[in-house]
Image (cartoon, rainbow, N blue to C red):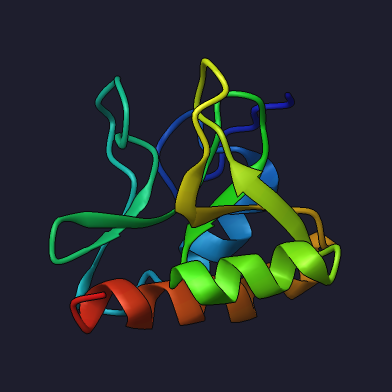
Length: 117
């Protein structure tokens, strides 16, 4: 995983994810990645809840309705996210589409989490 500092984001934010973070910089409902460490410190959040992040393996991950995740997995656009020990998280998608298409999924994830899932 390549980590590149970007002045628009917190130190250590993955360079591809930095573009997504920057796009949400003016959204007053979104909390941008901070300088802390630990799970969620480098994630985008709305109402204190994560909606998009980079996994520890450098994969872009978003939270979406279970049915939507199933659809995207079936279409080959991602995989169910498994943070460890083989446990799949049914509302989380590990994205496989090109970075140029991440914003649409990030916005969809923000709306899903913001509206109370």
